[in-house]
Image 1 (cartoon, rainbow, N blue to C red):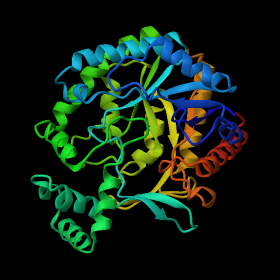
Image 2 (cartoon, one colour):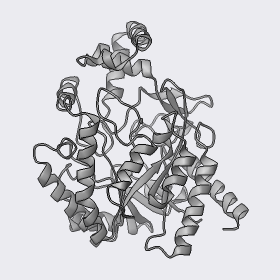
Image 3 (cartoon, helix red, strand yellow):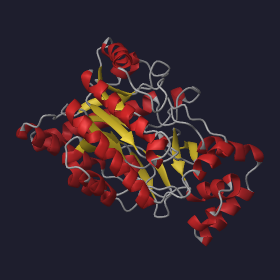
Image 4 (cartoon, helix red, strand yellow):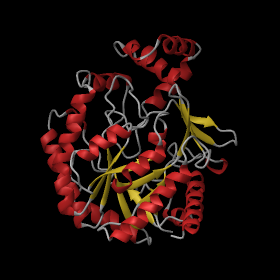
Amino acid sequence: MVLEQNWRWFGPNDPIKFEAIKQAGAEGIVTALHHIPTGEIWTVDDITKRKQVIESEGLRWSVAESITVHEDIKKRSGNYKLYIENYKESIRNLGKCGVDIVSYHFMPVLDWSRTDLNVKFKDGSLTTRFETKVFAAFDIFILRRPNAEQNYSDIQIQQAEEFYNNLDEKQKEKLIQTMLLPFPGTEESFTLEKFRATLEEYKDIKDEEFRENLYSFIKEIVPVAEESGVFLAIHPDDPPMSLLGLPRIVSNKKDIENILSVTDSPYNGITLCTGALGAGHKNNLVDIAQSFAKKVNFIHLRNVTVKENGDFIEDNLLDGTVDIYNVMKTLLLEQKKRKDEGRKSTHMPIRPDHGHLMFPEQNIKEIYPGYSLFGRMRSLAELRGLELGIERSLGL
């Protein structure tokens, strides 16, 4: 295989063990030091211990996903200067330990958003979904965010109200838990009250100011990344649309172009996530991959079926709206180009991003939505087969 095959692992408490990961065909691990609170330094000692655990299993720590960006940095308030310095030190320490890629995101408050985490797919597996009317129902009638109605059309508000009026108390509570579900390894766990208070902190921060906050952060960390030999890869918004009145600035081709132009360095790159960007029905993933192939430092491949109103469902890898075949072809051609040009870093780590929860695992509560064993194993196998077929057809 030309592309480095990887697997996201959430640390010692992950229910997916190394034996299974290796049997799935992965050669590298994508992980983070989840036990270190957001904003604190990843020390050489902590990084080395985690690296030794991974390498003792015959695997490689390929990507740090991610060093979480503190909310103070995003808002450019409070102790943001200290947190930026800590972020720089963590990058330096990763470089010293030979972990040379950091994937990060700049989404405010929430890492991702879905309105249903247990959708029964046509084959009986479970997947995730985002429905605009459900999100609007949560925002307007449960969260009761001030002036939330201004972010929706009359028809969206009507559909949201009809949906909300048909919910019983148990269904409302389930929706709240879904919307506020923390990502594995994060210490942030919201109640509705705390969530409202956090959103309030962003009420005066508009897209343009938020962009400048990101650009300032990039200008600070890229020189450190260059010195440390660590390639940065910003992850797009998931989903790539405005939610809860919060700024969204990594959502489309123009956003990515602006971010990469902040500093023209191979260390200022992107995580090409076909699922996150694919959830924007106007995004052409083949065009985006071709346009920014040189700056792709990390790759997430998954698929979605998306509607024009913003609704989407996580589909099988080779089925949904995204043209995975031509995205993969673009990446393989870029990999060859890097080797032919003798670039300093030629490896392009790839991982299956999310997978359906299949029958053998559907009663295992510890599995986080999207991070099943069998679903991701299927996706990784399909990626390997697709890659080999394209390589042979192109003579790579």
